[in-house]
Structures are given as structure tokens and as C-alpha cells.
Figure 1 (cartoon, rainbow, N blue to C red):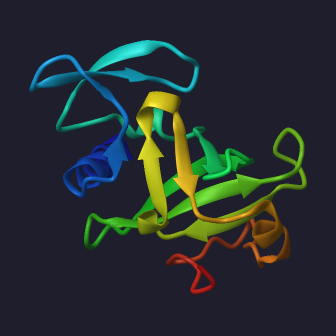
Figure 2 (figure 1 turned 90 degrees about the vertical axis):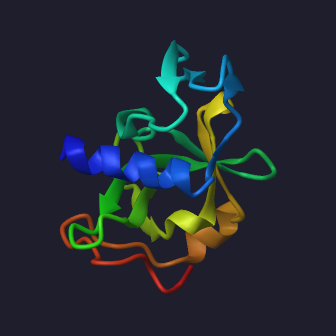
Length: 141
């Protein structure tokens, strides 16, 4: 699982999806984790554990939930989808969504994923059952 997460992070960085980190030099950056600790990391790899639990916000700054999981296709090694948990309380009653990774901009400086969706869109959209996870991201998005 850790190897799979490392592959994911490499894909994210190679794809240019990660932005907002402060450059210390050409080989390392300072990354602020969700609990606001600063970590020195390579510009070529970022631990996926830093991404799980990050806030998901829209471009208006509204909180849309948290990254619950990042799913990897074991055949291709690419991100299959990102699971976002919306609503609920302490993990109960939340709605789960499977978004394609390309739907996000990862803002590491602010420890959040940004997406062009509204709260209303999430409230009206079909989620997936926590006991029956999809193989791919939803065609809805």
C-alpha cells in the first residue's frame, strides 16, 4: 500500500497537479501538512499520507469535505479516483464521491484540494455506498 501511495504521489508531481509549495532550493521544498507541521520534502516525491485527510474546498473557499482515500489502479499504477467525504459528523452520515484526479488542483501551501464544484452540486449528486466502492471515478463528474 505504501508503495502504491508513493507511485500516486510521483504521478501527481509529474503531472504538475501539485502547486503552492515554497521552494527552498531546486531539490527540496517545505510542505505544510494538514496539522500545520512543516516538513522538508523532495520536489520529485510527496508522501500520499500528507494528502489523505486534506480539506476539499471550492474556489469560493467553501469547505466541501475531506480526502478520504486515493485509489490506484494496480494494473496501470495511475490514480483511479480520489474519494471525497462530504457532510456527516465524525464519519457517520457522510456522503462519498469518486472524483477523477484531474478535477482537483492540489494546494500544498494551504493543505487543501481545490475543485470547481458547489455545496449544492454535492448535495444533489449521487454518492456511492461505503460498502460498495466503484472501480473508476463517477461519470457524473
